View 1: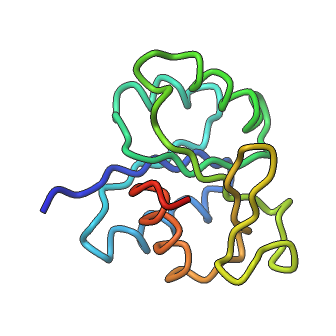
View 2: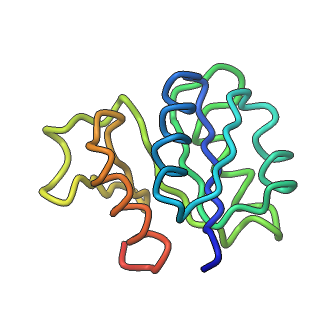
Length: 128
């Protein structure tokens, strides 16, 4: 089985590392973490992710800036994005753990790891 490549772009090093360990423990994912938003596009080009987990509130470039750069890049514009942010609460999310707003699919950072994995798998296969 080919592992899906997940890029985590988040300035919270603890969240990035925990997410990396959680996803890699499934043996279904290869994960790279970039905590410097200014290096996100370069990292994405080098890593060639199948999906990007993107924080919104970061110093330097914020998630919206990064998303616009990804959409404008011919090599990255088709990569699905799942926004994982503290600005989204569990109360905002539906029973599936998701919030959909303005074309974005978002989950709270406090999401249960098994639900995050399900959201990633659903996003990868185009269900969300």
